[in-house]
Amino acid sequence: MKKEYNFWVYILTNWKKTVLYTGMTNDLRARLKEHYDNRGNRKTFTGSYYCYNLVYYEWHQYVLNAIAREKEIQNMTRDKKIALIEEVNPNWLFFNKEICGHWPPQFEGRK
Image (cartoon, rainbow, N blue to C red; front, side):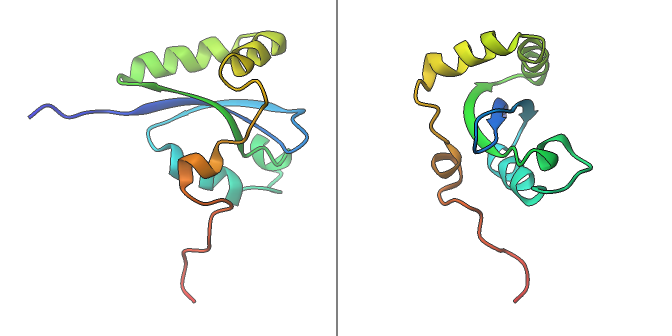
């Protein structure tokens, strides 16, 4: 049986939509939660800028393709990244709830 793989390249922004962050993951839902949980953490870029709102994502079957695409987007100018986002998301809607089912993430630890 052939195993199906899922890799996601994504762009996040902060609530003011002034910061852009490009990343790659094999579990977009979990990664969004990690970015959210890191908010305020000065040791990470996304944490420092409260950058956890998903405005763009694309699927790749192969990890090497996803890595190459992530690097391609990271090397784009800000204007080109904005054009990429607005191609599929002209209103800069946040897709976190669409991907996670609910947003913000609910506490899943011990009570």
